[in-house]
Image (cartoon, rainbow, N blue to C red; front, side, top):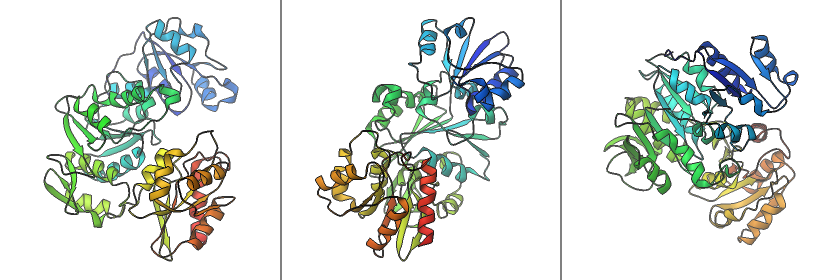
Length: 446
């Protein structure tokens, strides 16, 4: 860990989740005087109680403005919006506000590979981790994928690489964060309740480019014009990838081969996960920049079936292929999933009704879906949208188990059965993971 001096600094850690808990302990080890604050009462929060027992000043039950008195820095939980009155007041007082990713970047002796985008972050991060595993890159996978970045950064050594999935929430709270390789997969309209506008959301994602130099690399989706505009404005060496066109540089598809800088790497037909090809192209770019051999890439890509609940191939029954994309909690993600298949699929969709319509799926109901099986609070709304789009092959069922059974009996050899709900899961399930697990269990019962 790099020696960063926080002596005589008073730091407020805002939010006691995994990241706040780790950041508080790290900052104190660096010499800071740390106050921890959470909206939940201390006695109801095991993490808060543990911090108290470790000697931290912990204040729960709200965010009183007097907490800002004498504070030099705020390290906030990524999910707390900047509209929070405490943060609004902090801005007025010119108190810097960062996330723990910024602290991780300060202390890490290992270089960063940072991956972000509206969709596909987890799959791409996981795949990069596997491609770099047992190579000199010596990867540690962390970030939004589950492990707190500053926690692993404190232990990382110069001969390791931090492969990090980062959200717009995390990146907005960075100032000097400097990844060696940045990966921007795509940009769709998302998290407007947090960022306010698509432009602000996109700008938060693009912050990972701003401190890169010509010794660093920006891997980006050349098929996305907004992504390209941000990447091409950076000082990093540009490494584009494209699933639709041949490039002068970067990663692209030519004559059924994935090509990196004119070098054939692997045939498309050899990929075990042919869906989400953009994620694969981005991962190959990072692997080649990191010195991974084509033999290693071939070994991993012929055995990688995706990340659970994220367009995951879960098995084949009587010639029907089942894919679990339970993480698709909005129509943008469902459209991305449907784009991954050449032939129309049997789509299982539905869930929590947040009051939105599904008109943006109209074209997909016309061209990408041969039969819709819908369930949950939005079932009738989805049925109506599909009918208006001209898709009359719609079946309404009660739950995911029934949807799987119905899909099997309505399908034939060669069909794809895709769970991609376009909705949150909370009407019938605690989490999208539970929903996906029930889909998998129902498939296995067939």
